Amino acid sequence: NAGVMQNPRHLVRRRGQEARLRCSPMKGHSHVYWYRQLPEEGLKFMVYLQKENIIDESGMPKERFSAEFPKEGPSILRIQQVVRGDSAAYFCASSLGQRNTIYFGEGSWLTVV
Amino acid sequence: AQKVTQAQTEISVVEKEDVTLDCVYETRDTTYYLFWYKQPPSGELVFLIRRNSFDEQNEISGRYSWNFQKSTSSFNFTITASQVVDSAVYFCALIRQGGSEKLVFGKGTKLTVNP
Image (cartoon, rainbow over all chains, first blue to last red; front, side):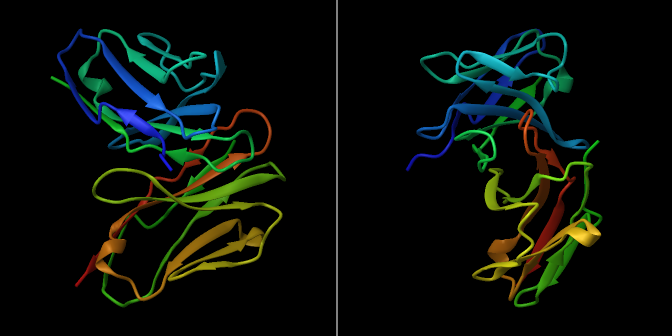
């Protein structure tokens, strides 16, 4: 029973490069969420997606960040032109739908050097 | 606005002690869900429990128990006979029913269980 799968687990990028984080939800789950964990800020919601739709992106920074959950394949969180402040753990989560339990993946740790 | 407060930043206990992690929440919604997650040193977030606002029954799962009290807006978590493997950061979270499924997390309580 595979859980939420994220990769890569660790990613190092130089300033200005792009980071792509992938997330495969649990089997049967069609709702995907991305959260960011910064050392002093804790876990913060970024975006909520269903297949091919962004439902709520109110937590996404206005620039450089985008997310998608295509009909086929994993959800992708894309960060363009990374800066040091983007260094954080990015967690993907999934659920069967609203009012259901939300399960998290192991996280992707992004380090920007 | 919703808010979750975990006033205990760090707790240190000796193995076999009981320990309670506090969680106080604020919401204007009448229907909502409360969660607890565990983040061990390896970093992943592990789901522990989900409770809806209409169910105030306490829950026990092995050495873990949860006390939900709507009157005080609290959802406390107790570990009985703690073990070293319980060492982790524990997060309490709140989600409103309906609308966007947006978890609001507390800042977490770091529990260290010493042998």
